[in-house]
Length: 206
Image 1: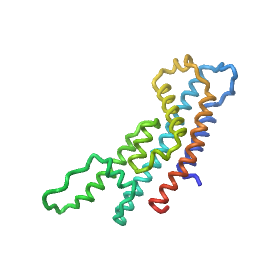
Image 2: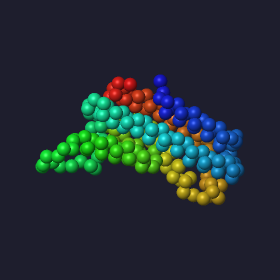
Image 3: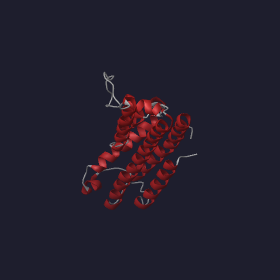
Image 4: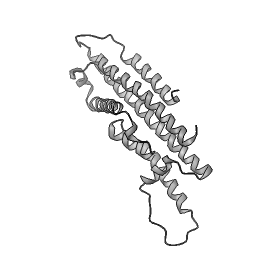
């Protein structure tokens, strides 16, 4: 069963496509300036939805790891990974302190992990790998085709985010090739979504 985050992503992507790709396919590629500008906006908006989906699922794992630690003192794989990649690691204390040193390191690690997700900016390969590492998810288990598709969409987003509106008319691209690419990525993400849910269940029980 898809997560609520994936269901929201799919719904929003369909809504954006319906409202921005509101022109017919032209086999000769003769699209108006308005059509191409709308297609550019479509790329930016769907990219934002994809990015939000990934970040929300990662933040969900971080929150669960934090909750499990606070309620039971048990260390999950996600918490362990957050501590490993935390810049707040310190040497062993050499004097007595009334403060629980380990707890303070864990709290700092969770804060940093959450901050890394909040500071993420993109869905390209390096973005995805960094986010997955911080929660202890095996990046080698991710379908390389999905990674390639997201990377390509991230690259497209960069192309359209950094050009002026008048250049959209000059830039040659087929809006319907892009809708197909995004549909493929969302289809692959559904499999990834199920795998993330299985990871969540195996480490947090729900």
